[in-house]
Each structure stands twice: as C-alpha cells, then as structure tokens.
Amino acid sequence: MAEKKKLQDICKYPIMNIKESLDYLGWEYTDDEEGNYTNIKCCGKLVECSGFFGTEDLECLKCGKAMHDMFGVTPTSNVTATILNSKDFDVGENRHWAVINKVKEN
Image 1 (cartoon, rainbow, N blue to C red):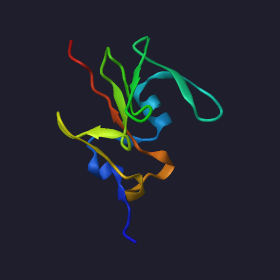
Image 2: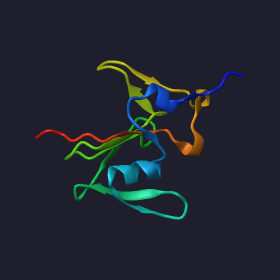
Image 3: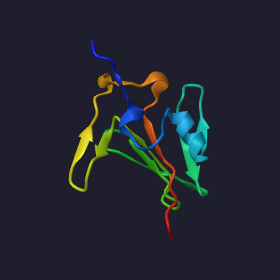
Image 4: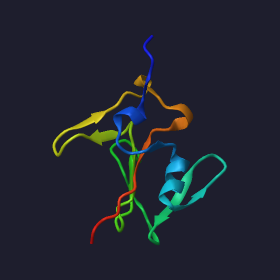
C-alpha cells in the first residue's frame, strides 16, 4: 500500500484541526464536551458558515479571515471544483482545515 500524502504538501495555507484553526484565527467560540463549536465570532459578529455538504467554509465577512474543510468541495478555478478523497491523505489528529488568515482591503 502506498504511503498516504500529507494535505500540507498540496495546500499553500496552514492545515490544522478545527480547534487549532479557530484559535489561530483568534475567533471567539463556544465549545461543548463533545467537540462541537458554536457561536463562532470574529470582529464582533458571527462568522458566515456555508458549504455544499454541511459546513465546509467559515469566513468573517468583515476582515476576510477564513477556514476551509479540504474534504469539502474545493474550488480550483472560477468554473471548476474538486473533492479530495480522505482515504488518500494522512490526516493525523483530524488536521484537514485550511486556514486563510488574510485581511480584506477596504
């Protein structure tokens, strides 16, 4: 069996688990003992959550900070997208969130 690839090797953004991502972005959130994260805020407002198959993208519409589940639908251009097969990648400790820590220019 071939060695699994690391997601970080195919992504220009840092790959983290969900809690690491939320903390890295400096977002406020509520978590419960079961690993659910709710009431996620940035810049004093709830972040936008979206996706085709559940929550795949979280973004602050004010400052542009965001995170994307690499196993969700991932745009590859303005007209195409792909879905990675999680069985092809080493996702130790559930690290499959790309963290986009950019600031929108107003």
